[in-house]
Length: 119
Image (cartoon, rainbow, N blue to C red; front, side, top):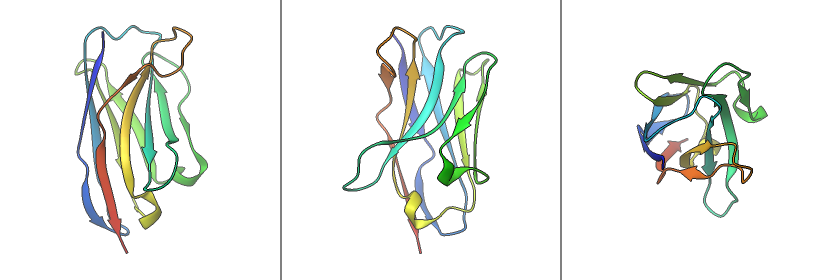
């Protein structure tokens, strides 16, 4: 069983930065994919970025390319999302997720952390 706990959310002005962290407990296998999703008020949850636990490509949704960076520290079992040049449309609850490659998609989720960007 894997547990994910997000931290680092908060209130920031447009143009500012935040760094989210996702601490994982339990066994993370090398074939897992870790990701960040977000959900704005009144909207569906959307994919933001993903990174393989071992080697592999990193992907971002178009709206955050060049502003957000996903990274990981395998020794600390932590995934990060560095968010720069934040915009009001980045406001939402940010969720960390893990895909164990069991065939059901992202099967582990954190509780979420609120990010609010004021204009």
